[in-house]
Length: 420
Image 1 (tube, rainbow, N blue to C red):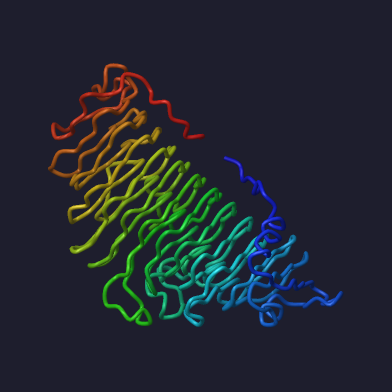
Image 2 (cartoon, rainbow, N blue to C red):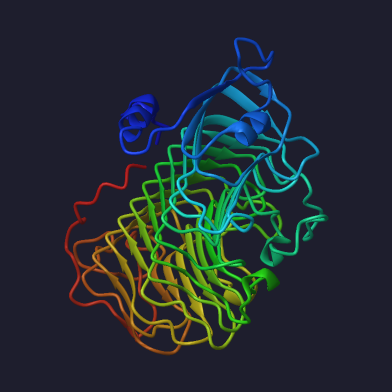
């Protein structure tokens, strides 16, 4: 899958939206000439509500904090945040109600923590940008110097792009590579919901997942003792490859509830391509009592050549999708995916209302691996053979547990288009 530019012009979009709420146009260049500022931070400080800041070509060595509705539009502009906390921090904690910040056309490099952090803000867009080689503070499992409002990010320094307590954000058409992890949605400071992550190329982020939706211990600033939830987010048509391949690693896409009370539910993972992950292509984990890992939909994804899950969620070999929960996880739908080159196409350890239906399970290993004791509904799948699941070694995907319900099955491959 190739990285594709937006089909519409950012400049056209900005000109159309200016009819609704006019703002001034400011400019930045590295020399500060032609009535332009010579740093992005200076321009942001001078900008009014809904102003548009055009950033000229060159490298800007700074960390930019945004607390007002503005648009940053780069033209071959690089933010080098070497030795600094973040490249861009959209800080709604310092500006309650912050919304409608737009970031496009920038390359953000070398920050100690996130390349771009969006915290407690709404309707933020991040598009057509390159986010690379951030999370430099990571030292083993810790992230020295990261603030107390990010208690859940010690293992990855917040990844390349982080939506933290954010809602209705759009993260689209970005290239995210060489960070600890790729794109993170978490609820440390507030609920994270109704966001769209689409059409991004997320590759070679070695220590964590390509894209992860994780419910964490709430930070003290949230005012809550209970996790606030990661829900109703859509992850659509992203390409994730080569992520999480180092020690402790990660999945192509992860949906996680990490502590008692955590809640990751009602999310949609649709039409992504997920390959060469250190852990499964998609992993759903709930590790403790009183967690909510319900009603997630995994639909139309192309999954191949990933790794095994580990620790308490371990799978016996490489796995396309792993659903692990120590409590009932109900209403999760796995449908219309094409899974190949895996030892286990789908692994399930807690089968409470998990539907595995209308998939192409063509990995030629275990089409569905039941790691629990209850029944798994795996009807109406294609198992690589017209005659349905067969004995191991036949070239067809297999079923080796009487609690897996596989009949009826599809006699030919489902007409899906995973775009490997």
